[in-house]
Length: 299
Image (cartoon, rainbow, N blue to C red; front, side, top):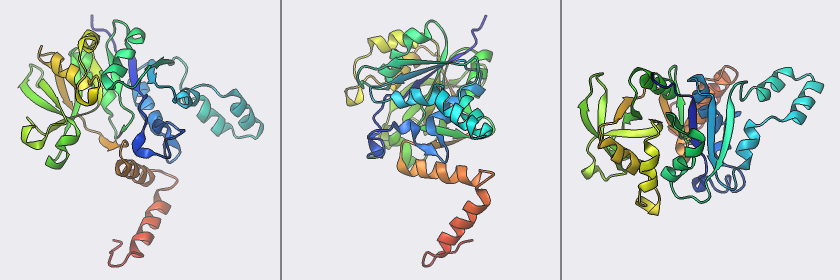
């Protein structure tokens, strides 16, 4: 009988140096997209896919992430006293009943693969998803739900992929495609971390959503440090792919790279344009600002 995926791992121990000085004292995962932190979008995506155990792999300066998802009874009391019941319910229900938050410490920053391995005691012998909060997804159907459903139909390890342009190949883990499986999905023969364009076997880039069986853990334990002297998740996937146990799933959602300043800014703009309260005023503001730029056509 196929095990249902109920556990998600969120590696959130990174230092966020690209957003300094904002991230000197605040985790980059708590940077807001209007009024909601980046990490909350990933958590909501996981919960919507049926995940009930959220495993956060944190570092020393990341206590604020736990505080965000923990109850704040004093704040709830004050909001109740002021009659702000909608705001009280909003903060009270960030994590709905029946969903558990588990926090695991990564003692030192030794790479994404090491962060995933730190979650092994909390995951146990269960399949699980990994969500990188930097990759914010937007759309009617989000990758985690698609991948959980794919696993239920055909258990395997899955990578969320999308095709990128030539100029972006060197930024991602790039899939070496294998033959299509019986279900029509592309199998992954290998994964090359950030290759130069001349060495890229395809334009299919691995995005920040994964499904793994626990067989990934012994591979991670045996890995030697790779690029940057760190334990690379891409290297473990490459080993796993050699057994024919990895499939690629092309995502249908819009992805924002919130690990970069421009990607983060793009996410804010698009979410503002989709926001019921701000959409019309924000669009008018953009047109006004654009019209004020010399030589620009606001239409």
